[in-house]
Length: 537
Image (cartoon, rainbow, N blue to C red; front, side, top):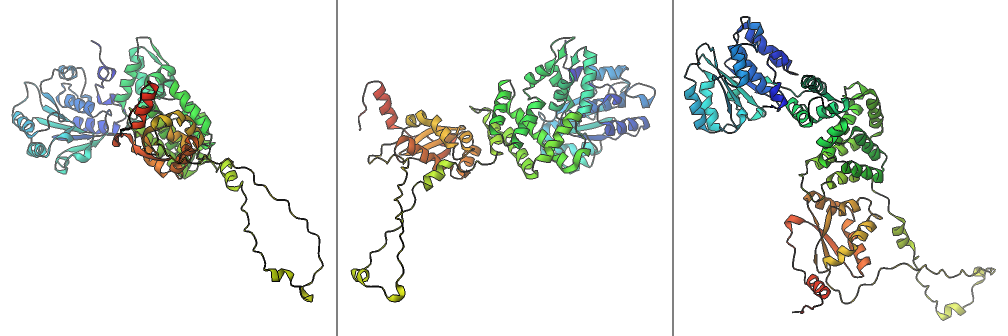
């Protein structure tokens, strides 16, 4: 029966564990010197070797090899039994499903029994120990403090801060770290050689990066990509299966941001998504890439990066061009977009919005300036002097030689394309009316506020309240951004007034928090299309 790669090639000796030398060296020396503790606490992220090291320690304390320095040998009957899962004196408990005090009381009763013949120690491995209840921890405390001489406890957790200090103080604690890409790549290459398939270097780099420091995650991804023996895992297949964007796409999108090229950046996003890239994964890759740019900017090229010399030179050039605060804002925005839950009717919108919001606002268009200056203000007419003042002769001191002054030609103001005056009978607005002009509204809004079209595309005409259009957004984040975008609400109302010929306003709501009212005019329009009528009553 076939096994997953991480199970089939689980390390059998301490020397086979990757990236945790600070832990395995100490455990190996303790076994060789016969200075073993009665309880251990292994802490660290998932997939870094905690359970594997616990099983190796269980092998080592019962290994039959004559030289303690060679334990575990992975060859004797005890080591083989533990590897096969048939060793009865190794008890693994999942604390996530055994959280109650009764489970620990049962364990406390079981530890009183001696191990089987020829076995030195009975070993209990409690995985995800932080999931135990407070009562369960209290029940475990006394047994953990003074267990029988034939018992060893190994506790493992991914959330060290949830383990009570009273438990920690009775254990030898070892902290496991995340692996770097070189260590993961080295292990994956070794696995490929053992299994008889080939991985292209770029594909290997993608898998190692996607593992995010977890060797088990990376091995599971590799297992997912393998089709058959003698297979060649290409970068194209890896990118398609993992939903990742290419390094070139991430770098080009960063260039588009630095060049303030909104059209080019959005086209690049759409091209990547059309090729199968996952939008949230693209956001995560942007966060990772921009973080490396920030580190380069702050620490210079001395900081180690897992990139080729050509890629590092390009990243250095981008880091020199990028503003410090701009990089920080970009990292925050793409990280927020990556955290938005999937399932939106337009899943690419958080990515698009994160990119568009990083672009500077467009200047006020000429159309607005012309509208404000087309009609010059007419000076107030001069008051007529009294008749007596007109006929009175000027004094000698006031006499001046008359000069011919040509009269200026009257300035005729250019006709201004005024908005259609609101009709006296203001008919209620309908969603059907707005849906017919929604595309034109979105297009016209970009002439005044550059970021507004992308934001409007994340919403939709939801309802009408009299002459007020209600725009619905799926997420509160988008609704707040619309409300906080200066002039957006007024601009949408002005455009609607211009397109519909009646005074219209707009407001934004969160779709899930809004109850759509009954729209009588929608029924009336539908009835007219069907050839019937709707009574006013």
